[in-house]
Image (cartoon, rainbow, N blue to C red):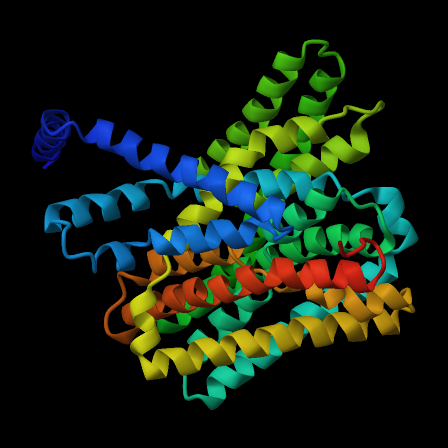
Length: 431
């Protein structure tokens, strides 16, 4: 069996070399990077969040669109689809850097000072999204495990689009500062909820597995604790080393080595790279004895990574699903209920904690995007459910398509909603 597998790999390698496929990969990457530059130039000129342009660009180059072009051969479309899917690792790296960046905003002093405000906002917006989405899915006749999975994914708020929008304006106001911390806590809470709910949903539809405290509570708890521990330990060691680095190039390499290394280690151990890198950033913020000045370095490093991430996310959107009435109904209900739960819950939590008026009125507008973390979770569901018999495997594909479809909407509206909130709160002036 192993010999046959190795032989097949050699055949594939020979075919790739014979047809110069590596050159064609460069063609595609080169075209997308050039177009990304043009998109960034246009969005900066017209003050549109660049994420919107990247998502639209990716959608134009999605497999579902390329497949409809009559002048392309079946071989090219199949190769293009394979190429796009082979770049999935960019999602992990991009979200890992996002988690690291968000973690650096988690100051213990700030959290201690405003702990009630942050806790209530995150608690109510997460619970609101979960209840409204899960409840609406049950009313639409979806199985309980589907309702639980979609409700769990709905709690995730992808920080990338909002963070990029905030960084483009370099804001330090009350709303933007609160939003950064809420995004960090929200991501951590969503990942923790998923760590418990996904195994429960999987076990409930697995005929040969019983629900026990060990596989529903103990194993997920150990994975979460391990991720946090690895993140804090490596983050502490890394920031210590960063403090004595005087070469800018060494500092850049240390950041790359830390985030890439933590991601590789946690993937190997089958624990969460997102939680781990979140706490790497947390260690950088709270254990450093002097200012490390890494924000500018991270911004420069992540510009091409984030551009590739959002473009590739757009390529996964299935335009053909728009013709499916039942799919559209589920996707639209999911999107509307999630937005209502996020905005309503955040507003209620802020008011109960006596947050400032600009926070209570506009914090929910920054919680709409969900691409990245949510798509990662949807891919995990597909990986874990695809082998199951019957409808469970098909449902996992349905969930992935729903998240991909709704992510386009939330990623398009999210940065615009964040900009609207920042304008209305007075933190930026509309030109």
